[in-house]
Structure formats: C-alpha cells, structure tokens
Amino acid sequence: MNLSVSHILTGYLGTYASPQSKGIYRFSLDTSTGQLSKPELYYEALDCKYLSLYKGLLAAPVQKGEDAGISLLNVTSTEPVLLDHLFKELTTSCFITQDESFIYTANYHEGLVLIYQKTGQGITPFKRIEIAPKAGCHQIIFHDGLLLVPCLLLDEIRIFDPKQDFHQIGVIPFPPKTGPRHGIFTRDHRHLFVVSELSNELYLFAVEETPGNPASNFRLMSVHPLLEQSADFTTAPTSAAIRLSPDERYLYISTRYADVISVFELKQDGAIMIQQTGSGGIHPRDILLTPDGRYLLAVNRTEGGLVCFPVDSKNGMLGPICSRVPAFEAVSIVLDETDCAFQ
Image (cartoon, rainbow, N blue to C red; front, top):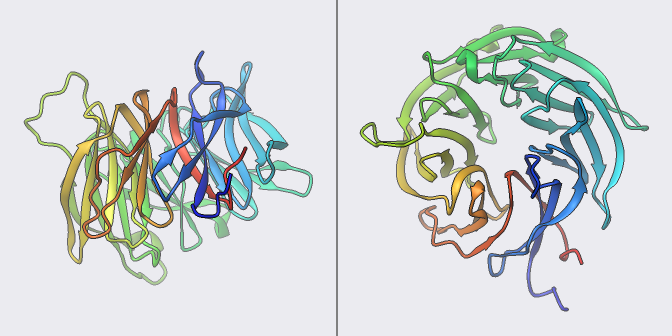
C-alpha cells in the first residue's frame, strides 16, 4: 500500500479499566481524509487513563493489584518496550506529563504531586509534594520555571518553585465552587486560559511581570460562561478539557453531561463564543487538535467513541463529524507524527 500521498498520524488512547477497555490503545489518522483507524490494544494495563508522549517515551498511570503508579514505555518501534514502572501511589493519578528529565503526576484523590526522575536505567522517585487530602489536584502546568497545579476542590491554582525545593510561593484564587480543572498558556506565556469543572466557565488571565513576586503576575481579564443559566440538565454538567488552536486564535472546551464542545474566538481583550456543537457522543473528555489545526479529535467515554471533526481554517468552527471509531472508556488522547501508519 502506497502511503506517500497521505500524511498519517499515530495516536494513543488512555482508558479507564473495564471489561471492554484493557489499557492503552493505538490508532491512526489520515489527515488527507480525516479517517480514523479502529483502535487496537497496544499495551495492556489497568487504568491507564491519562497519557504523556515525549520524544518516543509514553508515560501512563497504572494499577496493579492494590498498588498504583506509573509505567514508562518506549514506543518508537512496532511493539511497546517497557522501560520501567514504579508503584508509589494509593490510587492512579488523573494527570501525567513529562519533560527531558522528569515525569510529573497529579493525584486527584490523594491531593499530591509526585515527580519521578528519568535515569539511564529507568525511573526513580524524586519529589513528593503534599498539597491537601482530597485537594482535587488535576493538572501540572509549566510556566517560567514554575509548576502550577490546579486544585479543583480547593478552588485555586497553587504555584511551586523548583528552585526552592518546590516550595509553594503563591496561589491563584477562584470563587467558591468554581473547580479550576485544566489550563493552557499561549506560546509566549503572556496569557493563561483556565476551564472550571464545577461552574463551567472560561477564565482568561493576563500574565504580567512583577519583579520579585512571580505569584502575583496573573491578572484576571474576563470570565465567560460555557452554558446558558436557564438550561435544564438531568445531571449537572462538568467541563473537562481545554485546547488552544496552533495559530492561537481559537479555544476549544469539552463539557460532560451537556455533551458539547464550545469554540471561542480570542480577541485582544477577551473571548467570544462562536460555536457550541454536540461532541458526537455522551460524556466527552479529552479533545485534541492535529498539529496543522485541520482536525479536532474528541473521545466520548460513555457512548460515541473517538470522533474526528474537520476545523474550518477561516473561522475555527467544527464541521460535521468525518470519522468515528469505537473507543470504550477512553478519556485521553496523544498524537505522534510518523512517516506511515503502523501495520
């Protein structure tokens, strides 16, 4: 089969453990057509619900018996190679990310951040940041040498300085029962966008320089509701993922139980919602744009699976679904660009 005429991306799905989902799944996306391949089981392990891919290394939370921790895989060949795994948590973390030297996890239930160091032989524990029991730690964001940790159940983002042994140096407060979940910076780190899970809002911050006090750099510019106040839902909606388009003109946010994806156009002084469309299923979790911004992928955990939306290059809006494949209990997506699809 000649694949030279198309551009194929390889992707991986993280899933909650269930009889129909057994670990990490692999799929491909043909960006010339928007067609997805059926996800196939790539690495079997329980509760690999969030994934981080960095230079051919795939990190994921895992559950083994009564123990929880992380696995680090080399995915540069056809079959995954387990480099190492460690079990240092009571429950699997809800978020994982990595850089050149470290792997970071945020544990929602235990209220802590764990940092693992990559070594030539595998991984080793490096730092444990205790925040608070049931703090709802939901993400780790890198900013100007600092770590920002949204604490959903504390209604704040806590700021830690690695240069001061990860001492907490500040906090970004949110109104009660807001539930800040995930945030994303512009490439120049001049703006921070945060989605709240409980109040279903988009928060826009300007990042300003304050000599000697980096924790006070964040100035709230505007707040935008994601849903109509009068809307009636059987279950209270909870917003989940937030993504920024490659050209940084649009924001995309998924909301569970309302089962929608909201699209915002960014303006100099704020944002305007330009579209709200169905997620293609029930209980949308992660969403992800392709590197060229032509497609948006969404995983619907309960029903609908993995879907691919074309993105209008002129206005950032999502078109009708162009491809759909089953993806049971899938909640996270990562993409890796490759020369051709796997066999």
